[in-house]
Length: 88
Image (cartoon, rainbow, N blue to C red; front, side, top):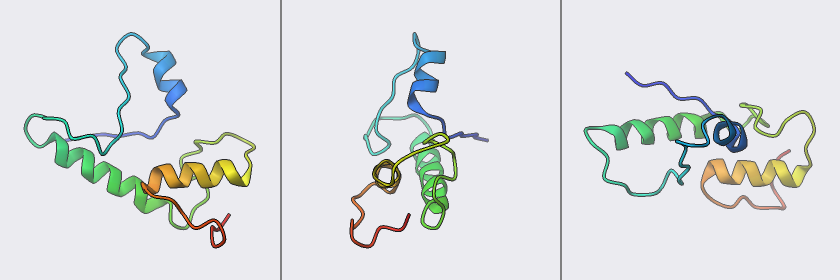
């Protein structure tokens, strides 16, 4: 059984500063058992929420610019989005 939650990096890092290490999800670590598969499933699930929703997990706070939204959605998608067709 696994549980995941999307949280702003500064919130996580400030709460568990001594034991937190943030790494990109596409980093290839030697993980035991099926942990790499669990992470891949979580990433797929998170990415599945974002094609048609602005900020599903409220990563940007109350107010944000279109550029901040695009940057966040690109980070989640794992690739650049076309600027001229990016949907706000």
